[in-house]
Each structure stands twice: as structure tokens, then as C-alpha cells.
Image (tube, rainbow, N blue to C red; front, side, top):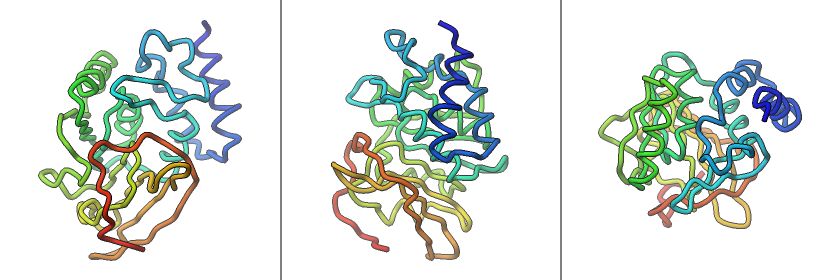
Amino acid sequence: MNFEQARFNMVEQQIRPWEVLDPTVLDLLMTVRREEFVPAAYKTLAFADIEIPIGCGQTMLKPVIEGKVLQALQLQRSDSVLEIGAGSGYFAALLAARAEWVRSVDIEPELVRLAHDNLERYGVENVIVEEGDAAQGWPCRAPYDVIVVSGGLPMLPRTLLEQLKPGGRLFAFVGEAPVMKGRLVTCVGEGQFSTEDVFESLVPTLKNAPRHDSFRF
């Protein structure tokens, strides 16, 4: 299989038409090798517009979703990032290529090992993968410039927002089937937040995701 041609087609035929036009994001998706983070059985589908299973009932986000999230976050070289849901490690690799460091937390030991091993093999040095329940965040290392929640959240808990620095951005998939909102929240001041629903999608719900909304917009 010609991975370079498939990667080009992914960017030009899937991602760019979905209004992901930020050149730094498109360059990133052309540079970080997605096929290195896909389970061997799905390698030929690494660039397809599908959610690839990675075990524990979880999947890799579709490439178009990854592109939209990266574009919304507007990552900076100085950013500290918390990723909730390590998955295969691919999205952490994308984040790490633009940010100063990434802390990726997953509740499933199997996925922690998968992400860690993939990132180590690929040579990513500014990501730490930890095992734990981060459905309410990871306060011991807060505050963060960026928080990304890779799984669905029926409600967006206040605790997550409180772990953002002023000017910090949080992206999460909020709601329940059949539709979730890809939501960008920006901390515009102490205890003040603005929110924008960027697109609609459907992803597996985060394990132990809080069900009671303690903060409403």
C-alpha cells in the first residue's frame, strides 16, 4: 500500500473539504504517520473515514474529527496539554508536535500500554501517559493551557473548567446518542468561560463520565 498517497488523499479528500483549512494543521496531519498508531489488522484502513477499534470498546477518532479538533484548539508551542483518553497515542502525538508537553491519561491499562508503546516507538518524548480516571480532570498537574476529552461526556463538569488557565481552551464531545456536540470552551477570565459548538459527532462515552451537570452555559 502507498501510505504517502493514502495520507495525501485523506487530507485533500476528507479533511480539507470539511473546512479544515489551517495550513499548520494540514501539515501536521501530513507529517505524523497515522499508520504507525493503528492496530496491525487495520493498517490498510489507517486513512479511511472510519472509527478504528483499538480495544476496550474504544476507537480512534475519524481523521476529519481529529483535524477539526486541532484547528479549533489553535495550539501554541508553549501550551501544556491534558488529554483525557489516550487511545492509540496518535492524537497525543499530534498534540505533542505543536505543544510543549502533553499528559495523556486513560482508565484502561491496556490502552495506557498501547499509547505508551506506540509513542515510544515513534520517538515522541514530550508525552507522559498515565493510568487513572480523569473523567473529572487531572487536578494534580493543573492548570493546563489545553484540555482535550477524547470520549463523550453527557455533561461537562465544573471541575474540568476549573483546571484551565486564563486563556486556556477545552474541547469535549458533550451530550449523548444520537448526537453529541464538539464543544470548544475558552477561559476568558477568572471563573468566566465562553463556549462554541463547532460541529456534531458521536463518539464512545468516557468511562465513569459524570452524569449530573454542575455547570451550565
